[in-house]
Image (cartoon, rainbow, N blue to C red; front, side):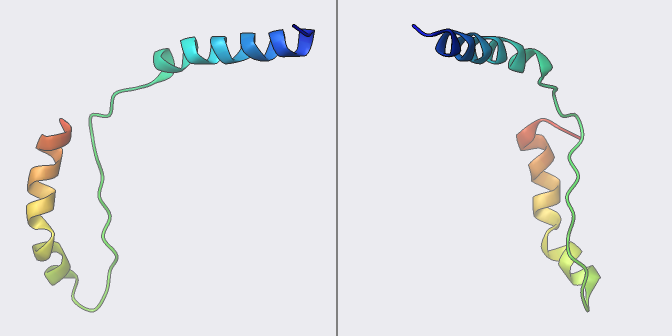
Length: 60
């Protein structure tokens, strides 16, 4: 194997080991809705999503 190929394989191996360690659990999810003429209607239309999504994802 060439030196460059060995170096690339080592870099990929190191990245695959380090990536899960750097991952963080989300404890809060923020959902943004675009404003418009009737913002209250948009919030009411999406309230069921806002109620059920945090429980499904395990966040606040």
